[in-house]
Amino acid sequence: MNERHIGPFQVGPVALGCMNLSHAYGHPATEAQAQALLHAALDAGVSLFDTAALYGFGANESLVGPVLKPHRNGITLASKGGMAGVRGEDGVLRRAIDGHPKTLRRNCEDSLQRLGTDVIDLYYLHRWDPRVPIEESVGEMSRLVEEGKVRALGLSEVGVETLRRAHATYPIAALQSEYSLWSRNAELGTLQASRELGIAYVAFSPMGRAFLSGKLPAGTSWVPGDIRAGMPRFQNEAYAKNLRLLAPMQAIAERADCSLAELAIAWVLHQGEHVIALPGTTQIDHLQENLRGAEIALDAALLAELDAIFAPEAIAGDRYALASQREVDTEKYAFEQR
Image (tube, rainbow, N blue to C red; front, side, top):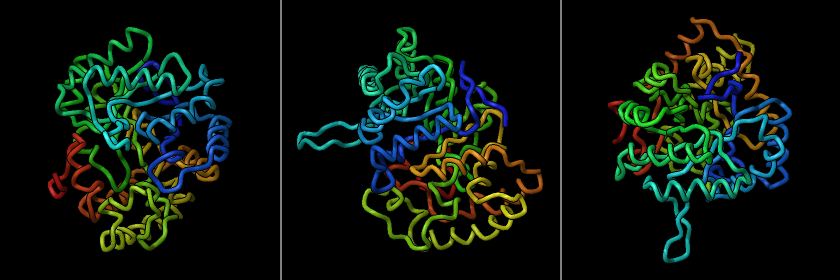
């Protein structure tokens, strides 16, 4: 597929989400494994790398920065602020959403230091903080652009109204939200709105947190530190029901002569020329498989079949537990918790 645009940047259709290397899915990769994965991505031509202050409470940026530093002129580096680790009175770091201008500036400056760079190409507001008008948060981020610390701005997990308000304050280059065959909230408005506004839609978890790869175990026992343990659609009866969706998907993959993972990536990329897939992995063979998804052509009939199999009402369980569900501004279906 052709390269795609994020603001002033031209990038490949499949990017690399670096979160998995430090955070969220159980035991993180070793430093050597992570470095090997990043070098393999560079060798394969990946041109957009995505990290955040939150991931590993800064450890991910510290890991990614030195590997990417010699290649900074050839890649687009994205990071995020507004959701980071804050140390409590007990000395424990905990995730906190904070969109106040002073916090966003501090988050950005800390990220620049950890990444070992003087400018972040694409800087996202990781979560909108409803205590702070979006105009204030984006206004401060725009000053980071003016000061040369950031080149372009993005938002994550916001709805249409918030996206439009932000874009009216300062041009937004990218909206990053979850989008896959089994998480289709984007189709409630943000996918179309981003297209209309000329904003790239960066789809994280395009394989449904590995569910759509067909490589997860049939049981629901997760290792400590795996965030899927707290996600309703990965739990017990819901997970068992969702697993039944993979057999008809596999039949389509065989007709398309590709793997389930390649099919999942291909479906996302077929949703619009402004869409970029952002899978993450710790394994080089999975990285290569993800990239092959950009080469899979799907006709209208196959796309329609996939849409029908994964109709939103066919998915059992919400994508987040209630507390996390309330932290995202993205539009929700009537049957989801609010």
